[in-house]
Length: 397
Image (cartoon, rainbow, N blue to C red; front, top):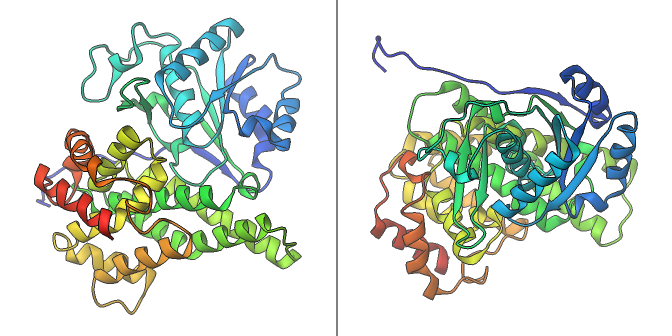
């Protein structure tokens, strides 16, 4: 950097982190002046025992629950949520769940007082200004993946084409996050693995992204360390619980610590990727669009091939990341080998073929990926031919 260069840094929202943080919800809403919250969640979370406890804690408020979110979030879910928000005459939102309900909650908040269609406010292609009131959001995350609870964007897909659109504005940032690792203890192993790899992909791509943002770089490196320590144990504990094993008190404590580590890592990934993402995400977005693949799983399957593409462009950065997971590393390739080994250990399919993607899909995937907004931040330019090479690598890995 030249001496005259001026950079701008941002840091996001207030986070209350720890066991029992969810029980501070009523106080958080009172501090924000919210008396008629709309609780936005997904169909699965709404059935969990602790969810009804959260609803009961709101007893003195006039609240309503919208649980019409599932899968990759789409515009129709936002529109249904808007109807619920209006019918309840809500004055704020509580978003409870993973990335999907949190993103839908943000989109509902945006459209509560803004005219037109949600995609009129697409980042980089907006045809309307974001200049009206946006209701306050309190977020309670239940997965350790997207970190949307500390992000300033919402990713929503078109119902028909499944094309993902990003809506961005600092006002979409939740005012308060109640991050309670206890809520993650029951996550199934497959969801734990896929969401955890989503967090790892955010961290790695943010560190590699073009631009100068040392705050994000430092957060990304520490987040990678947390994943290296806590993702595999989180998955293994989930597998043991699913098999009906009883954990000792010591093991229960270790499980909670692993979930807490991953919850922090996920939020750190979302904080770090305000710097940018890269080619892995462009490939993954195309897989979600064309093959309806879970976003975290798509990132996980594509990450090794994408990093093999990038490693020669940033050898020093790869070495720094490699030494986070293996202090004795002498080459950035160690990081890629570690990613492959981690994916195997937590049950991620080793290739696109193993994940059910046919070679016949590659051309369509490339056509979608090349239009994605993430790869321009990649440390190495990505051409259409490069996308073919990356997908072919992942297909046969």
